[in-house]
Length: 388
Image (cartoon, rainbow, N blue to C red; front, side, top):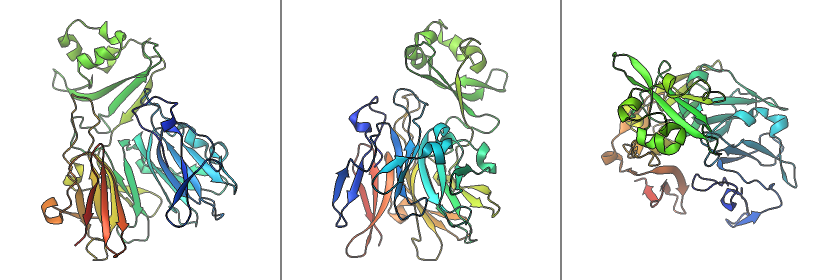
């Protein structure tokens, strides 16, 4: 079970990773002998037998180091050797050390060689695929590597029935004030500019300048930036001065030494169709799927027509005041046509309505055989739906 969050600074007991063992009757016991002592902010945990030895292994995704955004904890791969789980990241998966902010992972045989490969989603990253080569994991080079998103969730399935696994990716959504592209990406500069032990992240986006072109301006208001560090407070006397400051003029050359740079140039939630040659073609999901961040998917055949459909939840309330709530997504039902296209079912017609800060969506089957669809909402109630 991944433990973590952004409300505390590590190390804290809330960051202790937990392994719960099922006794086969639905009762879980906390195990301390099988898992090593791990204290960090983990974003996701996936149990999998990656080496096909009959023992379940665990992948732990690294989340943001609390108070040090956008620095991330290292992700890790724990191999089950029988009596305990051991960290084999350094020997089998050295890429994990610099993989960045991980939000979701899925294991799937992407190259059809009989073993499980790893697909990774994260922030300021493309969707990445690591092929299981037995003794190590090798990153696959694809045309997706230039599409740097704020990806929150992924699902893998064959949506167009061609025999190849496709990737469904929930992203930030295009309904935002940044309007990013490969030519005009969102840029994050991060450094401890005032040497106080905390990272100072400064976000930039392209907006129109006085000449009618585009310049890369700070996203945050002057009041917010000036509170962040005395370095910024001393640079300007008037809001109008700050309003004309772009990425080239905010920092001196000396201040930019050692700065970390991150980019986001792709904000749309997409279905990445497998072209059959270990590459993918991103197809935008319908407009309604772009209204807000998508945080979780369910993939199933809702209308029993033999085609895969999608249920989705999302939104994000954890933003700066000047950004506000990203809350335009009310839950989503998309009916698939079997070729990679989808038709939107309006909330009033589907009855599926999750309007707040929804994070996860799960499907449970109860004793009568009926499905329950349960959506979690941050700091709010669970919402439970059944299918008529």
